[in-house]
Length: 405
Image (cartoon, rainbow, N blue to C red; front, side, top):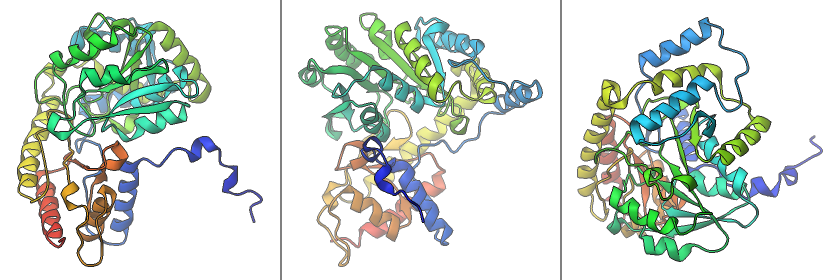
């Protein structure tokens, strides 16, 4: 018998939750293992394979014995390639020393907040937000200040609301465009409004998560770091997971003020060291490929756009579901609150979590509750899967929801 029990778990870990997206994926796998035909629309992962040239670069790295400890902040060659990419694609000037390569963009975010937050420091985030934002901030000892937005406003933050939320304890503003979970994309003019507020507060760090940069249906991506008045207080977080379908390679990066890069390097050196060498060499190949010349990226984004249009059209046909047209990423975040209070005689739908679990149990379709993203009226649907599966999933959803009165 064990002499210790769960009481030994720290309060820090007890205060954070399991990722809702990973939880739904786990539940889906459990149902599949029981023999059920589950369509998983919960995970944020492209259903494409890593491009062949990138895989070849990884094989060459193995053959060339690039298998020893890497520098903590990443190979210099990769840092230089990222700096060139930021200049090429975003017109941003960063030196290689200002770039830290990590085990995914998620670790880059964790590095940043663990490096800047003291207990009760505040981080302003726009709700809905990616599920891990809140828990990463809590893990670092900070406080989440969530600013709600609405589907009627395309889930975009009004600059007045941003300024009203700033207090002496505000340490950072976490920005995400294109957005997970909503797929909304800020225009340059809309970003300018936010930048005009933030320039008044030069001690507030702007953390810009741009992982969906190239999955954009509304034109060329604009980085909030491109506004010169806030460039020095902005850190860009990005990676290769989404646009190069390299989720499993675990390579992300941050590019920001030199003092922050040094702090993140010091932290990373103590708990993971540098990311895997083979993955870094694969990422190097991807970084050197201009997106405008990439048939792979063009084809993937074109496929996502076709699926988006199909999904929006089909969801619009379901009574009581309020939709909109996402401009980037590969998610739809419809308002399903009209189903709250309804029942099939056995189950009552009281909230978005009940709604999601009901569809998983009755329709065998996995979505993610909006409560995990800071919006209790919505659910997130990933359309990073085939059109055939999307059609079947929505057919099941429509049939199942008819049972609720």
